[in-house]
Amino acid sequence: MSDHNQKAVTRRGFAATALVGGFALAAGPLNAAAIVTPADGLDAGEVSIPVKDGAIPAYRARPEGKRDCPVILVVQEIFGVHEHIKDVCRRFAKLGYYAIAPSLYARYGDPGKYGTGRIKDLVANIVSKVPDAEVMQDLDAAAAFAGGDGGDSKRLGITGWCWGGRIVWLYAAHARSLRAGVAWYGPLTGEKNALRPVHPIDVAGTLKAPVLGLYGGLDHGITPGDIAAMRKALADAGKTDCRIDVFADAQHGFFADYRASYNAADAEIAWHRCLSWLNEHGAA
Image (tube, rainbow, N blue to C red; front, side, top):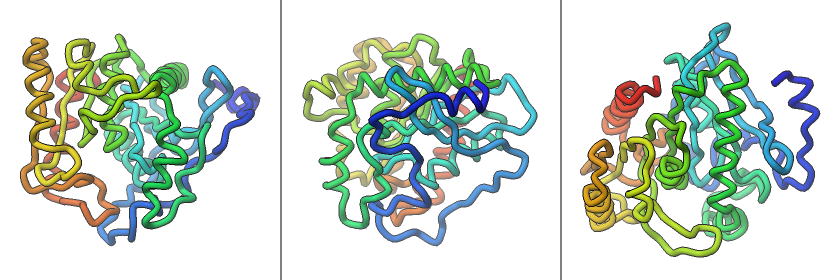
């Protein structure tokens, strides 16, 4: 889509029309280890994705001057599309991907406005209002946008962290065009309601693409019992092309280099497993 046409799409009624500036404030103090990937050699920045009711902002990074790059959907943490998520997009782009991270909370508010200690407010005011079905549609729209913008959407992958890790599992049950997914410490079970009618464990038998789960053994929110139950559900469904790896000494958020939970050694190993998984399953 041309820049002119992108600007022509309105965002009527959307609560947030831009991405989060800087790092996520609600995540707490910034870790000095935060990685900053330069954008040299990349076409990187904010774009606007047409959706059924207007447009949502997204961050896109792709190799400059190259076309037909494999497409990777990068799904935000609970904190939205902030600098860490943008940086991950640039890391993928440096490796030859067309990486795109749509703002999946755009209709409901700006997560960047929630400061330290206000995660409960963020969840109550924004996150809890986002319907899974709408997220699936927005990810479809992001994949279509990438395919029309020089990306090769036939080589489609998805990865996400925390809130986005759960979404990876759901999208793998939704999208027939998906080649592979990598879910980082996404919740596997939970309470259900009209907006979140199923969780990953409920869709284990309907996954349409192989998913690699990367989880922390010290994660207090996702228990060993949850992981064991998900592994059993996958095995019972005959999903031998899916796998869950647990890093015994890692906490929830172990890949988030801007947070105190960052575990550099496990993050590096997990990153390489992510890339290998995408490559092995035709999403690279």
